[in-house]
Amino acid sequence: MAKIQDHIFPLFKLTGNNIRRHPVINLISISIITISMLLLILYFLGYSNAARIVSSWRADLRIVVYLQDDIDAERLATLKSFCRELDEVIRLDYVSKDQALKNFKVTLGDDADFLADLPENPLPASFELFLDSAVVDVNDIERLARQLQRQVGVGEIAYGSSWLRQLFSLLKTVKYFGVLFASFLSAVTVFIVASTIRLSLFARRETIRVLHLVGATRSFIALPYLFEGVFQGAVASILALGLAYAGFIHFKEWLQIQAPQWPFALQLKFFTILPLLLFLLMGTFLGIAGFLLSSRWIRQD
Amino acid sequence: MIRVTHLNKSYNHPDMILKDLSFEINKGEFVYLSGPSGAGKTTLFRLLFADIKPDSGQIVVDGLDLMRAKVTRIARLRRRMGIVFQDYKLIPNYTVFDNVALALEISGTPRKFIQKTVWKALKVVGVERQLDRLPPQLSGGEQQRVAIARALVNDPQLILADEPTGNLDYEIANEIMHIFDYINSQGTTIVMVTHNRALLQRFKRKVFYLDKGVLQAYVWPD
Image (cartoon, rainbow over all chains, first blue to last red; front, side):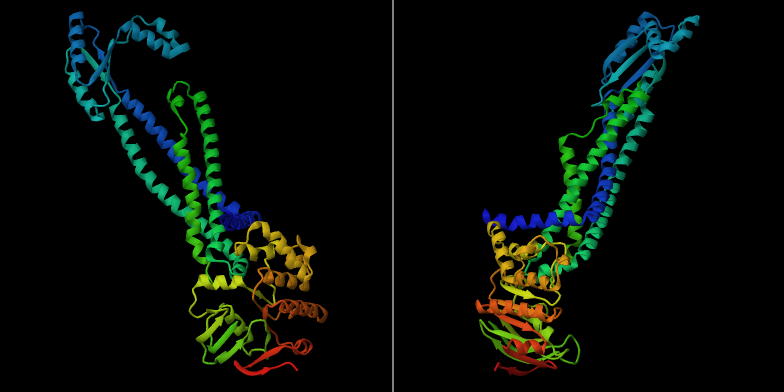
């Protein structure tokens, strides 16, 4: 054990010396990795939250069947049975005309005064059909809607299928774009970090020459730079995660103030422990990759 | 300690820098490599620690054939020897202590021994009070002493020195030579490159005299 310490400690000492004596170069590398990591983190944060919210909407698939005003009780009962027997329907709520008006008043809040002047309740009664998202695809909703439209007593059918399908399609595109974006950004970051390290090695070429002359092995010379890369990557990851978290909290608070009627502001979540650790590893890896690209410059004479 | 056999070196030019050199240096000897400028002294010096490779011939240093040795074994040889340069080759942003300790750290010396060993080496050369200074804060003579301390801190069997007094005045040069004398008296083989005739006269030792890449003479002290 003592022997390992005697070999490892000088490497850490050299790493500390390198970092302490070349703060500008380290600052540049850390800044570059931080910016890259921040962009990646923000992308994944946005994507993961969007995907979660859309999934929750998908789980809450529903069709609203507005009823004609002249529907009688018998027809209403028949229609209710028909809807309940549909395989895709897991729940049916009946909203009467009076209930619909009450709900509308609540939505309008202080602006609901004008409703008192209406001669009659213009809002129709409706069935809210909650669909089983495990068996219903977005495309199935259109078929169901057409089937319901053909029933006697049905007025209009309301569902968000078209925009939901577009949203799914958009999410898929964003996902594929994200893979390309992440790969490109990582490659650029590694290249820039490698160039910075190469400049750093060039600036320290005399020191490296001396180390060769007094018998240092290639690994003794190279490992402090590898550790430096690890340090830069880790620090940058922590900085990027911190900045992302601060930005996320501010955005969530802002959204809750600006758009209180949008419930999904409360659904926004930051990453759990595992993704945080993965980002930390990723930043560290970028630092190591940058070193590996430039390490061939630590050559023997 | 050193055996050179039919050594040739040309730097990819028709004119040979070193031509068919053969000589031996025994353990414990103090030998000068001398000659006029351009004779090939520095080239020979660099060959002796495998900084460059010859075109042909054999160099055996402390039992290691430098032509055949792998990079790791050459690194190990350099850790066993000390090398002193005319321009000192100290790391400017390392303290005196760190510069000398580096040689021990590279060798994997246990940490508990490093401080004491560094101090002892600096005491031999007379700069033990300069531990925390940086090389640019030292005079030329002091820097050369630190370089010598780094060379001998690992208790080497062999020290190679390239014009160690080249940048120093008469008195400081004398002091440096006395240090080398002392080291040699402890059993370390010294090979010193110099063209300084006055030095050769004042401190008489065996001389290998090079001229135009050829070993002209072995000059023995009176």
